Amino acid sequence: MAVVGQLLALYWPVVTVEGPVSWTDKVVHLLVFAAPTYAVGRALGSVWPSVLAFAVHAPVSELVQHHLLPGRSGDVWDAVVDLVAVALGAGALVVRGRLRRW
Image 1 (cartoon, helix red, strand yellow):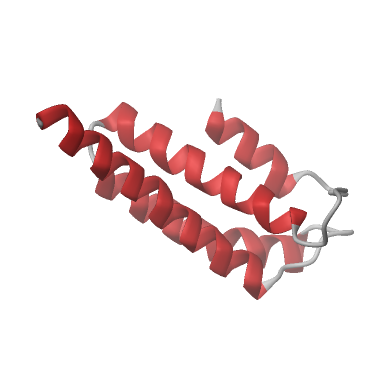
Image 2: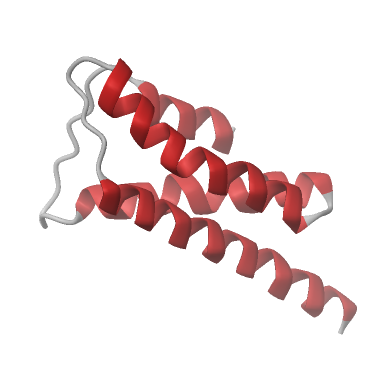
């Protein structure tokens, strides 16, 4: 479900994110990359395939938005936040794995 939500958020033709602060869009990017990274890694039982897939998807999604989706624009800072989110999702998986062994 997290992956479906991510794909909808990233590839829907026009997305307007409104919120009380100007960085709400970045919070959405954190959520749509951290949650799927965690969910897929947990489902696969391995961190690295999930990290690799979503780390590649982060810049690709911004390029697709910029070049192929009318009404959307790619943003380098969104890609940076996406990569930070992938690292956070992976970190949560590693911590979860270590806590389970403890």
